[in-house]
Image (tube, rainbow, N blue to C red; front, side):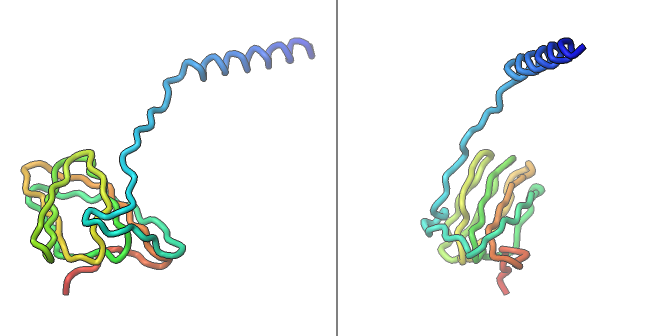
Length: 139
């Protein structure tokens, strides 16, 4: 009986290894290495930073109020095209599906969906402990 149990355990291990070798491989695609914001500012993390991760969805025509981010704010466009307006310089730039960037910090701006399709963004903020939002609305 003991030999049968050992044989069964070895056979099961070999079968498991064979199945693992046949499993599909995970594909890892680097998207960005971000050490500067879109305006060239260095990305500096706050002490003991933690991440806030959100999904932002802009229906066609939706616009955020003018605001700024005091801490690093990363954006990855999952779907659609978003226009970002820097209200301090008047410059605009467009983000499309697959774009990743670190947004400008301490600079007044807003995002607007000028298209007929929705926009979905994965947003990651790195903030100090206790901070619940990295968005400061313009008074």
